[in-house]
Image (tube, rainbow, N blue to C red; front, side):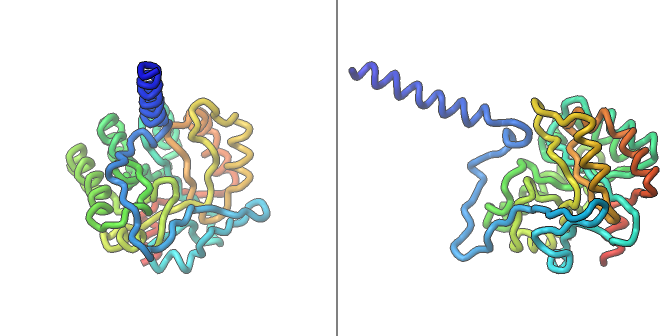
Length: 275
């Protein structure tokens, strides 16, 4: 009986370890759970960034208003009278799809911002150098892609951000753009303020779609329906550079947006206009 119980206990431990280490789809595998901290009692509750869409071609509403976010140097959408797109990519790891994305951007002379995590900087430094050399911006998506709203100390928050800055400087010799995107869109006003104090602009998004599941990539038709049907003036578009679909459609997608009368600007231009 004792032997059976011991075997059962070992099996349970192995299954638990398999779950923890095997759940690393996309960015989750880069989390270091021992760095998570529980917010102190009375801290601001966590919000998950979300959008509500109205009629086609109109700006969506966020779960916080543009006016409220701006108080914390945070934004999700631009001017509703200009047919301008601010194109951004979240880059958690490299799987062969960044290169065709960069090729399409270069073909159309479209600037973009890539929000990178530590793993991307470590594993794909040549692509990071290419982003910079071709005129794109590289922003901060934190080193380990943690739920930053669960980090209560300023020291821990700043370390997640500064480790990205330091690694980027080591690779490129330059300074990281002061643009921050909270992992998973999880935030609270406390860490928006911490990012602001570090000189960052926080950028959410006004258009995105489910493009991050590697084993369930959207079809081209599904992608165009969302990304063309819901495009709007002042859109901050979030795509994932890990998406095979995005790599395949971006050339045609940029052409369609251009045919609709849209132009492309940088988040630096956005930040300058909102000083």
